Length: 287
Image 1 (cartoon, rainbow, N blue to C red):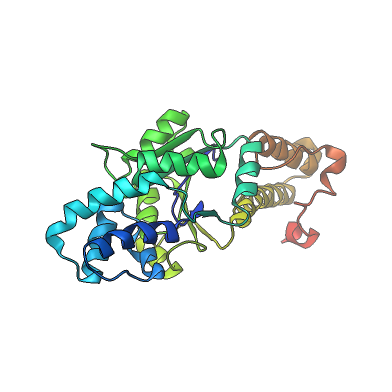
Image 2 (tube, rainbow, N blue to C red):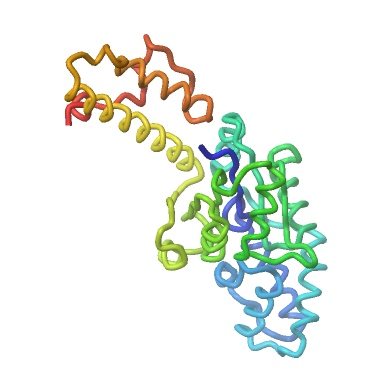
């Protein structure tokens, strides 16, 4: 089961588009170029500040000979107030709390400069929510290179296959895929579902709201129980006495105990099994 979850920052944990647009437009106006619409920055963002400035300066028809200056100014101005008009997406704090209560280790990986990433994340979520906060540092390869995700997995002492990676852009989908992590595309962020699908055709899951992430754990649990039921039905068909092997209820209770240890379900007893919310309809057992 998944022991860790790595989140992108911009467009995944928080709505930062106004903050990004504010800084970039200040620079464009300083260069004598027109400010760009806030919504356009949903597409300029995602690949780091340097790429963002290149994209918005081209869109604004700015003097590209000043690109390096613009990139430097972006880092400097952004670092002064990384929380300007930044809001946490509705339901995200509750989702993170639920994941932590289940023992899931949490981390952030962003292409935003490291200092700004750290200040933004701790300012929004406090210093004890995420075990690792990683922004882009000098000499570090940016996403979609998987090295950042692997570095975090190593710090968390988990295998990449034990990690979920959550993001909202094609860059994030490519990152999760390259890292060998269970990749989840969110639809409340900066990009559309079509872009995510094109980046990762075998994407594991999409979620429309932060709270819906928790449903993924319920779906995994239900699949686990359904496997157990069908397995026992198959055994029953080929044995004179099911009791000579093990009771279906005991088998499923054992599976529930395993699921609970891995943070999927609350504890469950033999007596409560028939009443659990994960009980499948009886007709499913007979199929």
